[in-house]
Length: 183
Image 1: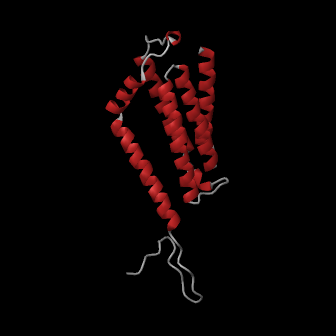
Image 2: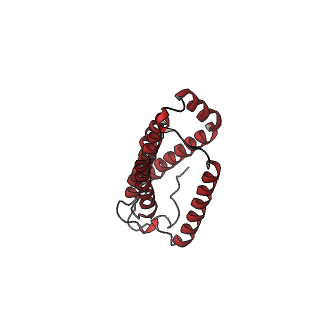
Image 3: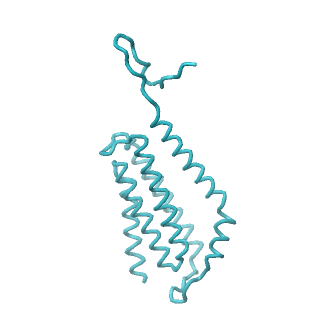
């Protein structure tokens, strides 16, 4: 069981690394599916079936589909995108390594003497997991849903903007500004 857990963890970590290092936005979204699916498998291995299926339904099913719809609606480039690389890779790598080290240190320190008995069966019921999720994590859950809704509405608004038709002999709108409507 431990070997399977470690193999899935390595696959999930590899998918996460490819997600953040690829320059193709659609490929990044698809590698995010691999990463989130790997996390769901880890939850299954920890006998948390309810959390694993919530992971699959909400994150893999909804969030990734929303990201892909956002990419399609904003007409993002399908191939390599020069806009996907800001040139701040060393600083981003330093921040990511520091955040990962802090997270590993906190988790190891918090659960140093805690062991999960995998052979004992399910540790918690759906009722207990649901109560914990919606009692302590309802505000971040709702904030994320509002943020995703705002992103989708923004993508739709950006995709609906029409460029003004060019009339021969008449200059178009100035660059860098969106055309405004007449009142």
